[in-house]
Amino acid sequence: IYSGVFEVWSTDTDVNLDPSSLYLRHTGQHPCTMTSDNHVFLPVTVADGGLDCLDPPSMDVGPECIPSEDNPIISGYVCSSACPEGEVEVSVFQCQDGKWDTLAKCLNAHETLTCSASSSQDVGDGIIGISGDGCDQLSAVNTTCEIVCADGYWGYG
Image 1 (cartoon, rainbow, N blue to C red):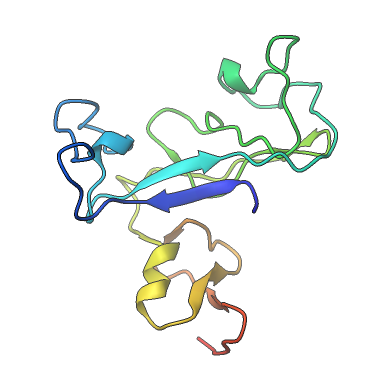
Image 2 (spheres, rainbow, N blue to C red; image 1 turned 90 degrees about the vertical axis):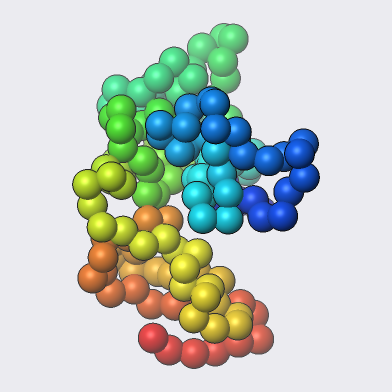
């Protein structure tokens, strides 16, 4: 288990989990708007036991990423406000063992042709993701990535 930004969607839900067309529909980045075709990227923090980050990041972030007595920032914490308004994170910006990552990778998904890491799983069984320079949750079209296989599988591509 590790911290990260994960792609989620819903399929075959009942009335309790059906997508909402009323709340933040214009951005599509809210769990109430996800469907089988409209995926959402959610940051998930997992405490890794390292040192807390005592200083704020060197970039502009929201208050949830600023450490204080009332808001300790544990090692493993994913800062979800590291990207400017209108952009999405394509990599994890987090506190690791008392230090913040040096850079948040952000992308304007509405202006850039992208494909998601999860689409690699449609290629074949056993593919669990991608790796390589510029290969993240969302990657620019024509980026060359290597596939990552589950244990017990091998491949190339």
